[in-house]
Length: 444
Image (tube, rainbow, N blue to C red):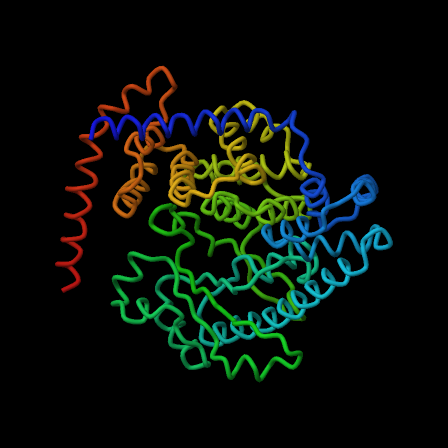
C-alpha cells in the first residue's frame, strides 16, 4: 500500500513537471498552421493584418480535415467560415468551403430559431412578473459579436431569482417543456434547489418539428439557473447582486433585460474556469466582449472580483484573451497578470491543455481538471469548500495532489502537505456526513 501511494504521488509530480516544461516551451514551439489559422479566424472583427495572416496560412498548405475537426472541437466552425469566406474564398478548396458554408447555415438557422424562443420565454416570464435574464447564448452573441450567427450555442441559459424557480418551472411545464433529467423530476424541490444550480428543460419534439421547416432536427434545451456553478466550484453568486444593475439591450427586434457588461465578463471567466478553458470559443467570448465594450469599469470589475474571490479567474480569462487573441486590456490589469506567479502557471497549463494535450487517460484528465479548479481559487476557504465536494465524489484522486492544490505552498514547503491529512480526514469523513445528516433531519 505504501509503495503504491508513493508511486502514485511520484507519477503525479512527474506529470506536473512535464506539463510545466511543455508549457514553458510553448512560446518557442511553432504551432501547427491549422491551429494558427483557427486562432486568426477566432475574431468577429475584420482587420487588415489578420486578414493577410489568414491568406498566407491558407496558401502555405493546410490539412483541411484537421482544421475542420479543430473548428468543431473548439466551437468555432461559424467564425472559421465567416473569416475564410470574406478573406480568401478563392484559395479554399471548393468542397471544403461548401461544407463549412452548410454548417454555417445550419448554425445560423438554429441560432435564429433559439433567439426567437428566448425572446418568447423572456416575455412569458415578464408577463408573470418573474425577473429573468439570459446568460450566454443569443444575448452574448448579439452583444459581443454583433451577429447571433457568429457564435455557436446549443442551449438557452436563463438566470432567475431562487424564489421564482417554482413558478418559472410550472410556466415551462405549461408551455410544452419537460424536465430533461428524470432524477431532477423525482427530487424534492427544496433539497434540489439547495444542492444543485439549474434545472434542464427540453421542448417536446412535436412542438419543435412544428417550427422547423428546413429539415434540420435539434432539441431546444433551456437551463433555468438560480446559481451559476455546481457544488465543486462554490461561488457567491448571490453576493454579486446582479439584479441591482441590469441593462436593457436590443435582441431580435425586442428589448430585453441583460446582465451588466462587468458582471457578464466575470461570469464568462468563471464559466471558462469551470470547464478548464477546453474550448478556444470561450476565450473568444472574452476577447469579443472586451473589444466591443470600450466603457468597461475596470476598477469596479477588479474590486468586485476580488471581493467575491474570483480575481484569479478574471485575470486568467483576460490573460488568455490577451496572449492568444491579442486583446487589448488596461496596463494595470496586464501587469497584475504578468507578475502573478499563480496566474502565469495557470495560463501555461491552459495553453498546454488547449492545443498540445494528447492524453487518453480519462482519470488523469479529470484529475487535472479538478485540481485546476482548486488552483484557480485565491482564497484558502474557497478551496476548502471546493475540496469538500471534490473529495466526496472523486475518491480515486491522488491525496497528495489534492493537498498540494488546496494548500498552494511554495515548492520548498510542499513537504507540509503530508500533515494535511488529519484535516482532510475530518472534512471528508466527519463534517460532510454530519452536514448531510443534519440536512436530512431538517427536510423531514
